[in-house]
Length: 429
Image (cartoon, rainbow, N blue to C red; front, side, top):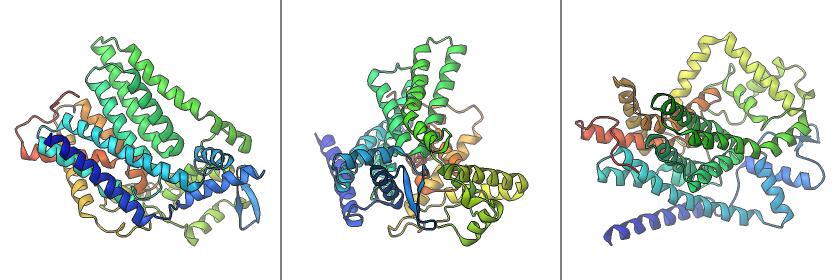
């Protein structure tokens, strides 16, 4: 009875704390500029202007597929059915909090797999529940990352159980993985890298089991592959829309600009905010017909310019990659208007430091690491790889933070109980 009382207190504390922070820092239910822009596109579409935004320089409406299209579809549906922005925002905040609570349960289950000490397991779960980005720097804002990250925690647990414990894929688990991947990818294309990689690693281990251990898991491999297929099918309306606009099948045109922003003479490894005059001049000097190009053509030119800079400046590129890696692990948080985001947060500092110590131990193992630890690290490496390819955005690091935190507690247990063999599976989920 005492156990359930403590659990109830924990969940109530999470709801109250997160709700209070949302009310304190976003009581007008405002959106960040990206989503406001998508809402404007939805209104322009319904007013017969197509998927456009108003360009102040040319005083015209220009076709755009810069930001994720699926949220535009959602906002079109809302406007058609007289669903207010505030209603949608309140619904999403409620969903974010519910997913946060549910993911805390699965984070606890993940911790049980790796950590023997019950006190450390409990503290790890509490730390996840009240982690700075989870509860405040991302959690207090209207960002769809608040849906993606908790779903990723749940999916990672289920993939780990299916891959490492030779458990079959239940129908419920299959749909949880499928829908989590699908909606995460639709609302936040940046999460595709993480989901694709974790499923790919799972498939690799399954194929290895089939070939070497002669395990009959063909149906599991087929089910995982079908997830890729259905997620692709879900993106077909977006691909068709963008083809009709630009004559090319693309999800967004944003990634090429992000690529250039991460690889140019003025790049410093992190998000630059508003492009500097020097950067804008660099673009116009190297893309002479820039203003006459449509958004897709500009994106193709961005990609070509960035690739050219990398090839012509290999030493600077390597220096930039090391700088990005260092920035990624700085104990700072999402660059928003919330106070203290650029401070060296002591909680982040402790978690990142312990994670890096864990990583050193992981890399120095004499034997090839257990696959459960590889799967734990996949979201981190996928998030880091995306940041190195573009630039460091702490919204992208958010996908990795639950797993860095768990790895930090795994290191603590190995430091406190050095006799336990690293990689030992503690309990079966």
